[in-house]
Image (cartoon, rainbow, N blue to C red; front, top):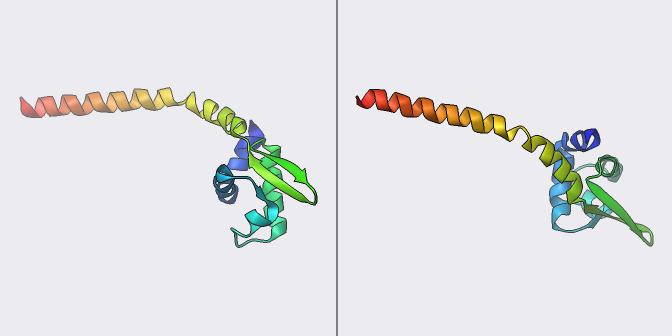
Length: 106
């Protein structure tokens, strides 16, 4: 999971994932959407692959990159564990507001 979070830490890689969520793309297709070198795109794709967020398939001389939702699911599941902390705090805030309003109306 550490590799997934490393990959997600970079805004360019997050944008690449958004593009790949629509359809698989070659390195050139990805590079055309960014103002960075093809070599830089390749490095980003390698980190995404190491994080198991994308898979790469070779077809002839081209390598096609595809989003792997299962890699994102494990990161989302881990983060989801902490939702309960937000839910608890939001419930406390709601109660505090309701108590304040009740006191103001009395």
